[in-house]
Image 1 (spheres, helix red, strand yellow):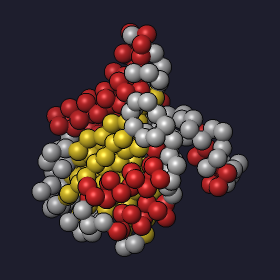
Image 2 (tube, rainbow, N blue to C red; image 1 turned 90 degrees about the vertical axis):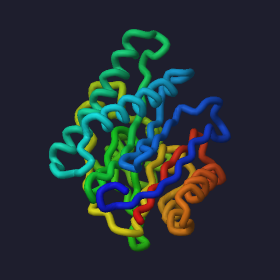
Image 3 (cartoon, rainbow, N blue to C red; image 1 turned 60 degrees about the vertical axis):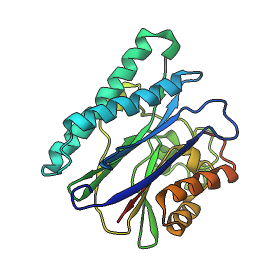
Image 4 (cartoon, helix red, strand yellow; image 1 turned 180 degrees about the vertical axis):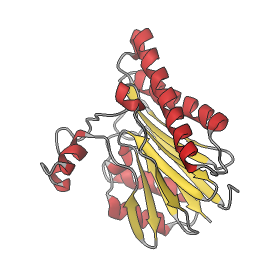
Length: 249
């Protein structure tokens, strides 16, 4: 029980059909207060290290600094952003100190349940979705060059799907831009809400229509998470595939 909300969840992270190692990481707080997905980059062991550090450091700061009663939403936002900024600075520092981790980075997406309100946000292109009353909404905004081009009116969403800069990020953890905030969105949760946190390995294989139908189809969040990942693999995803599914009861 988290505040007034009862949250149940499931998580899956797989290497996928085309990669040799899994640079994704995910985490669910045992008390169901918060959930994280990170997608590392940098090649060899660097991406794995970056995503591992993000999960470890953000979790530690969430546990120590975030007031999960949610009595002061502005303070909650500051604590969440401070936790992510701390992880960003540590990832940057290790990249400078150890040549094995030079230029490593990671995305992060989070969901935190604070006193009846759900806070979601992130850095990079890992996403959080909400299925409510049969409609699917992407709650986070991709920090990618293609998203910037869409917003500028230069390309369409259809063109973005196959654009050569599709996977190029201008903000992620491991760069100074990773500490400028997570654009948290506050959602007053309702019973029957279903949230999905995912790496871009999911959206590389399936679109919103399939995501919405899979979230609606399964009543067990762990079964649902497995179904999301299987659908992405069957849809041709060429990346690591990771998701956390959270149901509001």
